[in-house]
Every structure is written in structure tokens, then in C-alpha cells.
Length: 194
Image (tube, rainbow, N blue to C red; front, side, top):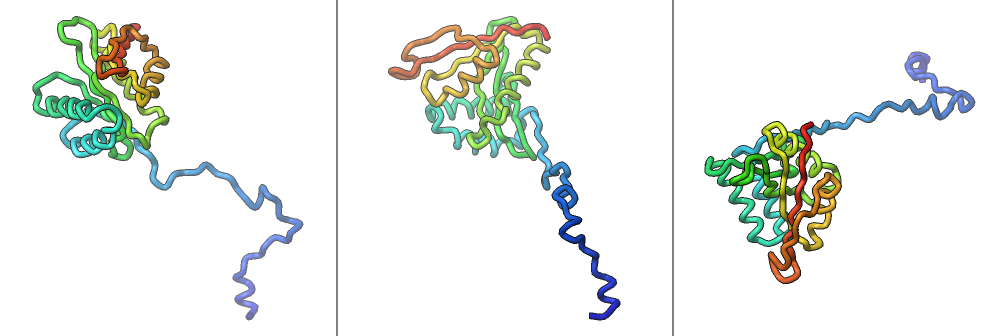
């Protein structure tokens, strides 16, 4: 090696000069692709992702349930019914949705029709965010209470737990409504005027 090439080499500390804190400088981890989470109104650009999500969810309930939900989206796009539909997206990928409307013939009750979150995205708080968004919208439109119904089957345990955790109270139980042993559970939450 020449003296010139030796001068370009960085001087390394000796073993006695090394310490863990000087060798490793911790800094906050910045993700390579920062997540952009948003709750938006449903529009036609979401259609393909919603249909894919509904197909992914077909094992949670009946096929009839999935198609009834799809009809809500179609009616919204056609302007037939006045449903509110919100989607939760992360980096433009739909992770879940909630559909609700003012209850027919009621002055201040709203109905939650359907809510779903991709199975791979559950337990991340997305369902809670969707419900809180709905509740805020209902309050701002003079709504006093929200009602919803769900299945009594075990694949709806997590949804029922979330509703109860957010203050929804079991209001009625219609035995064998969906099929033998599968009951319709009706929940209600009275909203304060936050």
C-alpha cells in the first residue's frame, strides 16, 4: 500500500474506545412507505375493491347477506336510497366499510346496516374508527340513537364484543330468526349530544 492510500482509510477506534452507545446510534424508525389512513365517502372508484372485500367475507354469514350488502352499494351509486357509506382506506386500499341511514319513519333514529373489515386487518381499530365516524355524523345530523342487528352465531362474536365495548346495549333477541339456533340480536345506543 502506498502512503496515499493509507491516508484515505478512516481511522477505526481501538477496542478500548468502543462502547455500545457510541457504536449504535438509535433514531426513530421511519417506514419506507408511510401509511396514509383515511375515512372517505364511498364512490364508484371503490366498487371493485368493495366487491372483492364482500367476496372475501362470504364465509361470515350467508351468501344472501353478501348480496344484500352489495345491493346497498348499487342503490347508493344509482341514487335510489339515501344511505351513508364510509370506507376506511390505507394508501388507497379499502380495508373496510360501514353503511347506515336514517331509520324509515323515524325522526331521530339511525340504523347501522352493515360494517365489515378485511379479516387480515382486524384488531387494528378500524371497526372502532368506522363506528366513531358514523356516530359523529349521526350526532351532527340530529340523530339521537343508533340501532343495529346482527347474528348470534360465533363468527360474529368479535363484532358483538366491539358493539358492546362502544356502548351498544342488547335491546331484543328474535329466536331462530335466521335459522334454527341462529338468532337476530338487536342492539341500540342512545347518543349524547357531544
